[in-house]
Amino acid sequence: MTSAMPVAPISGAPRPPAAASAHSTPSTPKDIRREVQKEITNLESGDQVVMANAAASIVMLATLPDAVPSLEEVIPRLVPLLQDKSLSVHVQRNACAALTSIMTADHSLYLAAAKTATLAEGLVRCLKGDGESHVDKGLQLNAAAGISVLAQNVEGLLPLQEAEAETAVISSLCSVDDASVKEEMVDALCAFAAHADNRESLFQKGAVEQLAKVIQGASTEVCVRGLLGLGMLCGASLAAQVQLASVEGAVDTLIALMKSSDQDIKSISRDLFEVLAQNQVFKPMVEH
Image (cartoon, rainbow, N blue to C red):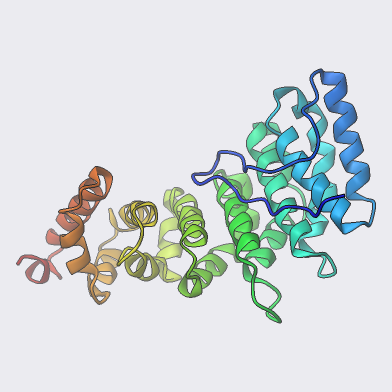
């Protein structure tokens, strides 16, 4: 049997992750049900290569509409894998991706996952690592994608808040260099910020400062996401606007981005700059 391949989520959750699987796609509901049951057995096999490949297969199965009725029972088999330190990074990468794919397959599955104890804690652990070794980029990527999806509705947001996921994402964003991982982490922050009553908490935790740093010299995809996050956090908060304008280089970056050839970047940065220009505290600073 070949080694399990890492599974990386497609950018822009909630689209399901892409995965490689050695199995052909089952064609009938009965075949799909049988295939899901087989992969559940494989997840419980104790053979880590088999387990990783089973999780990768579940990523693919979750893209099939006929699989939805069979997938809920997979969730409690996958969630414990996220916190098991004895497992390989390949198993945990693919388990994160499988859970993300299941949550995006149907809202009923999202709700089932959101109420599963320790899912949020497991995703946060995979994002942060165990503190004893270097955090795998692929694992961080998939964990951030899972957090982004889970945070989209209040049923998932609450357990993430209890697991201190917001702080974990913000602090991890400080240290990550990989553009793809950074993109997913900013997506996660945007998912948190989409909840209007959660924005003050994010501001207090330093999200504005980190996003203001992220947009400086970032790739187009990261920059757009960072600007979107700043737009949500700063649009109606004078304090957040003050913090944004206080970050070294932030105002100059917005001015430069207003000349971008990317229309999204150009438009959002212009809107942000106009918001700052109307803030009486920093109006003299940004009018030049």
